[in-house]
Image 1: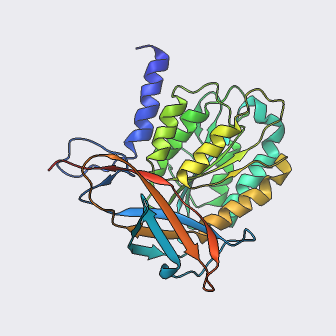
Image 2 (image 1 turned 45 degrees about the vertical axis):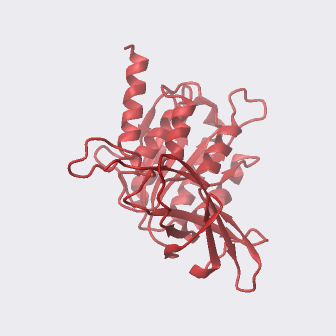
Length: 309
């Protein structure tokens, strides 16, 4: 195996291993968001807005309807509170981001300041390779000074290993103690240095518990820009993509993401048992007290897997 192949295997192992919870006596590991027949619980991270695009809070359990493969489900778990979450901030530190660096750092700091002060936060800076921003031995922090230093440890240079950064970020999320998991990715979307592939990254994102918000910063003439991958990551995980026209607009974007994370609902239901494995599709509808339909965003599918006795 050549050096690139060995690194690819290491990155995938580092990301995928953290998706797994191994119980005593189990011989294999499975992704966290694989729903097993004996568990029978699907948890959804749900954002709700009105027709003006404003976040809607204070809804009751009976304001929601959950459907799996078109069939209505009984909501057995419901929560709406500003609970701490595990958050990873992935910052593109490649050479092409140099002119935008100051605005990116200021906006990322705004996001931290506007988030729940008890959130467990980490920073990954990435260019040719991915580097942890926090000091060795510190996986998460709620200390603003430590997190500011973590953001500033990125040095703009080299190419962009975006796929590797997302995989490692998803892996570190699963080490956090908070039930809700979120990544905020700031990049031009291009990748020209990863050891893992686009499909490997998307597969892990689909099977993860994470909600991913993406912020695309790029020049129209930039040949490496890829807003498509930023849109797809957000869509498949129930997050949202933002494509500000300039880096100066980053602050309001990060403030809005922090507000949305703090306003999200948690819905859970017990899926029907099924013979065999496969993707199951989810739809959530919500209505206001006066009957008006509201806009809902959440993960659209999950992988269901039966386990042999």
